[in-house]
Image 1 (cartoon, one colour):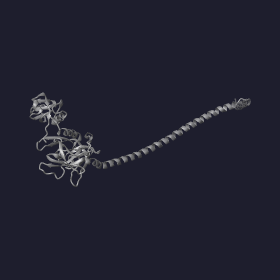
Image 2 (cartoon, helix red, strand yellow):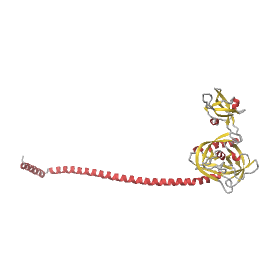
Image 3 (cartoon, rainbow, N blue to C red):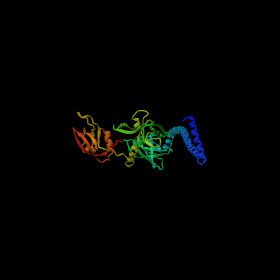
Length: 400
């Protein structure tokens, strides 16, 4: 079919369709309706896609703006918070010493003693801490040692006579009492919570006319520091486990309070222990957890009752080709539990209470868990053979 025929054929179809339309058959209308629906669907689909793209783009831009704004606010807020925190810490540090002093100083007293020579010391011998409002005061034993008369000067400058309740030369602690009531009381803190590097404040009362107290500050330098003190009269050695601080402990605050930043007493200052080191910048204090137990005994018995087996010994040396760990008995105290049980010089105590010991310190630490008059089992090496010996503990006699 050529192009003319083709054109003619198409014209006939068009005419026929129009004729059919005239007869009420809306053929073109139907075809046109379907074509418009497809076009509308396509346009609607494009609009939805376009809307989604615009929404996603807008959402991304908005979210990014909000996040950036939040981060900026967070950074600004964080910087402000950090700045405020640093400022607050600075204020706490700068005010803590004065605040602790204000809180604790009323509980710290000065102590003046009259010695056996009959002369009253012109200045304070040391300090003390009120731990009961009825007038009970803890101080160093060496502060009141050999005193025939003791006077206490309160923070309000009132002077009262004091009597001795109990003393313990081994721990260098003593309890005295004045006749008074409703006195300010120091809070004895938990020294086990003290950490190296913590702020430490030593407070004492020198009683001088020009001074109402002595306050020194530093940090906690060490915990459970062992200091060996030799009694010049008896030659007896005592090992103190104390808190070390670089806060100065002088004659004014020996027997006074070593405090933490909260104003709690964590140690009883001791010049005697500190002077044994002969080194500046090293102060020592008996920790309050140890002091509490001693105070309890001093209040109840007037002394500290410590158990002992009744020997003088040293760490065992090698015997023959075999090294023996234990306590080498140098001397047995006459009438003691060890004496009655048959312990002899040159014996080596390797165990006590089922626990191995290497020296007198370990032996004493184990005995502290027992009461006087209780029985304790010891393993002893004698002439190459081991024996189990039961010892009745006696009271350790301190040279006061």
